[in-house]
Image (cartoon, rainbow, N blue to C red):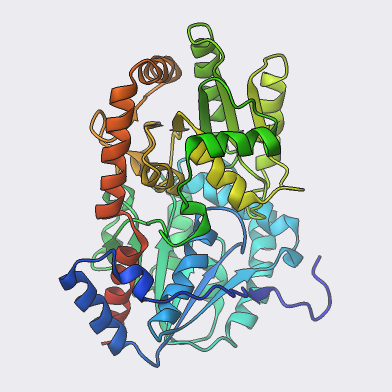
Length: 425
C-alpha cells in the first residue's frame, strides 16, 4: 500500500557527469560528425525515459549511462522510475508480464489486471505532470499508465525483452497500449513481433556497454582473483568459470550447474561463481530461483553463489568477477541482448553463450566466442577451452574487437539521437 501523498514516480538522481571528448574517440570521423550534428538539432529539447526500477537489471544500467551522455551533448534529459512504495503487488504482477513477453505461460487473473489498472491510474496522474518533447517508455510495466496519461508528446516504446516467442494472448492484450506510440524499438530483428499493425512503427538497434563506466574497467586476472579471494572467499588457484546475471529461470543457472558438475569430473580444481546480486525490485522471483540453486548446490564444493548485496561493492565485485574468469558463461534460454556478454567480451574474455537470440546477436560461434545449446554441450565446450589456451586467447581478442566495432555506447547514443531528431521533424 502506498503512503499518503507519497510520489510513485521518482526522478532518478544521476550525479555522474561525463565529457564528450572522452567517448567521441571511439567513433570514426564521419560517425562523430553525424552524432554532433544530430545533437545540435536537439539542443533545447527535453527527453524523458520511464522504466520500472532505478536499480538492478540491464535497463537501469543502460539508462544510468544514457542520461549523462545526452546531457553531455547539451540535451535536457531525465529518468523516472516507479518507486518501490507502490507495493510488492505491482511488481509481482508485472513480473508475470516479463515472463509472458519471453514466451512464458503465466496466468494473470482478472483481479490482478484490476490491481494493475488501479496502480497504473496513480502513475498516470503523476506522468501527466512531467513535461518533455519525447517520452521513452521502457518495457511493459508502465505501458498502461502511459496509455491512461493525458499528456500529449512524441512517444517511443522500447522493448528490451526477447519477444521472439511472446505469448500471443498477452500481446493482444497490451497492443492497444502500444499502438499510439510513434515508434517501437526492438534490440534484434528476431524480436519484432509478427503483427501487421506494427507496420511503419518499428526500429531495430542493439543495446551497448559504456566504456567509461567503472564496470567496464579491465584489470589483470591475478588482481581480480585475489580480490575475489578476499571479498568472496573464492580460492585464487585453479580454473574459474563465472556467470554474471540475476537469478532468473531464463538465464538457466540450473543448466550451468549441471554442466559444471560434468566438467568437475574431468578438470581438477575448477570453480564456479554465480554472481547475481538481488537489486531489481521488478524481479521478485529472483529469490525463489536463488533458493532453488542454493538447494541444488549445497552438497557440492567449489560452487559459489552471490545473491545478497549487503557488505559488497556490487559494481566493483561484478567487474572483478568478469576479469577473474577463465571463461565467462551466459547460459540464457531467452535474452533480450545480454549486456554481461558484451561486458565480458570487452574484457577480452572467451565467452560461451546459451542459445538465446540476443546472445547469438553478439557471439558468432567459433569466431569470437562459443554457443552451447544444452548442458552436455556446454560442459564439453568449457573443458575444450580450458585445455586450449591459444584458442581461448584468440576468441577473447576477436570478442573485444566485435564490441569495439558494434556494441559501444557512443554508437547507441547516435542511434537514439537520429530517432529523436526524425520524430521531432
